[in-house]
Image (cartoon, rainbow, N blue to C red):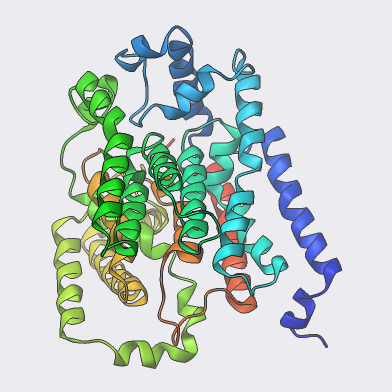
Length: 428
């Protein structure tokens, strides 16, 4: 009897596995799959926006028909898309583009893990095809995947630069600044990409004042369109979306619950080293636990509506329908979010830059009406496999067992998401 490890090495098994994932991704488009909910509804808003941009980019930037809360790069690029004159052409052309997004993910993985087999790297890169949100955004021409593409390109560019695989000159420093800014110009939440690249370059040249000046100047240049946009909008969102701006504390706890969801596989990944993880808890960690607990109480959502909020919130919403006792549901929700958030914190606490994207997205999410799982997915896949720095003696994320765990996790997630939105969508 073969172990999984021996089985996964067999070319036939892997070929069938890769083929099924790719085939399911392709069929999803022609079947009008909507595994994240809101695919068609949000497409109607995207179509309205692109029609407005077709009339003129500058006028569209301040139009009330600019029905998006994101920065406009996606719509600007589709202004030049020769296939966006029809709804189907608009969807199909964007779907074809999204098919290729796992490619820079694969090469980023390959540069970061040069000793890992290509089969394993392909398995990780194809996790994007299993994400309900990546799939839905691909099929319905949503904007969410474009910042993912520029995030991957930026991290890849930075990786090859840091490892001297390209010339370390001002041209490439400027290139990193520009490419990383494109993630932000696709979605405000991805400003962390520019911050991260900026900090990494600053740390690389911390003793070279001339280089530091160049880096600061180039990143400032790349941010100039930001000031222009915010000047036009008189705010950080397009004019039509500015009514959404406020402070919504519940989104903090909801964001923590969504982030924690993607760390659930670590319960299996470190099950043999759980004691070691707990033994490293110090006074600062206890303080963080208390902070998370009180934040969860302060920003506790109600369970009157299943709109948004993420998987864990929806689970407790359904539980509340059966319990019919909201106070008990809230206690269970607070306990779950606090424990899982603290567990996630322990996993990534060893490196301060690990928290940069999470803090930024949580902060920005607290400023809008509702936070959604799509704000974090498939971004968390990328963060876990190429961005987060784990303790080497505790976690080796890039091995066969761990990739298998995440693959099964996302397959189950995809199946449940399709069942939920097709048969039990409690919002509609």
